[in-house]
Length: 581
Image 1 (cartoon, helix red, strand yellow):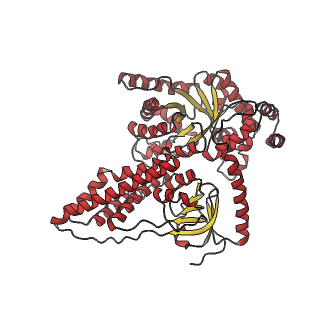
Image 2 (cartoon, helix red, strand yellow):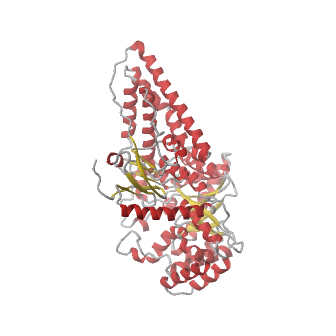
């Protein structure tokens, strides 16, 4: 197949870094599903044949678990548990058994059941649930390979500079190449929470997934570049492109080696001032990645994903089961669980509400407002969070609090839930910390009062900047006005920190501004206690913190806060960084 010079394919950035190498194409298994009539006398034997394929598949998944555990540890190994749970799903096996009992061969019966399950996912757009569909397909293919008696994929011919290209990679495929020092991965399907992405991050191998048709565009031996930072793959690169990426790759390697030494170090300035660097997550599957990157806990666990692509409200038990996975994995570190930050439109689709369309949903019935208006939804989540608090260190955080009345109303519901749990003899951590996001200007105005009634606050800079400056940052007409260094924003942040400390509580920041390394000395100098960022940013922030003096940062921040425009503030930061080296 002819591929244009420097053909760029865009996908999902799954694991950071640049890989340059030769394509090793993993062909998809080709199955021919022929319906065969099984005489009644042989149906028991056919069921037994299916059971043997299941058992062989289970043994292979257990072996994968052990391999991942040996290389990356137990937290990553739980990835294989998902496949085992699907394999042992009684409803899944029952449907196959019923078709075999009706006289259909095992291969065709399994194909029919898998096809029905996969079709049920077709209307779902959310990435998390798409990954679960892929898991089901992976399990089905593995059983089919064992039913057909086919051999495993041959990965023994891989060279160190190989970039594996495939429609999809299972955890077994991904972990099995660890000794080969593979350069990178590129797949047709997958997202940020796919097993390929998570294991690639653990192995520090660049990966781009969700490329749609890359496996049909390449052949083994072709030159390929994988840019895991931009989420791009370049096929048939020109000499100039190769040189550009080789240079960038060498720079990244030097920086990565330097940062490796910071991941497990404490976040402490040269004059012994300590802060905490935590991580933001959305999915339980992200916990191994953040631990591997040196996070000392979870500063923001977004729970909205539990509500996506459903036609019913999640039950208390569903909340509990998902949260418990995170709490157990992150222990002994703490996790801050934020109650859901959703608009009423999501719950209307579930049949609970009927608020119609809102002309400006970001200023409408959403987040804590929705919880207070419909406490029955709120209560099930609060009960689950309280129940899970006995499994580890758990903190609860409310989003979008605009003032003291909303905070008190939310806490009144929380207190009632606690009373109910006590009556039911259900244990929970009675000293669990309760805090709130500060992301609305009105909350900043009364932060002195709010800080006296919570155990901590966390600054949500994304919304705080948008609401303060009246700017939609995804609107290209006004995006240039979205400015974290606007003096109004910095003075708001300083006020939140100062009033929090006056009340004797810690102040965190979990918006994107916290992860921008160029802002770190300034925010540090303002007195922030905790940064909560995405995993790849952790080591970079630790490096900066450990190479600056808190006293010097404070002096610079004090001066920056007197300046009248963002350009002057940025110049002050640049001058400070040059001075610090």
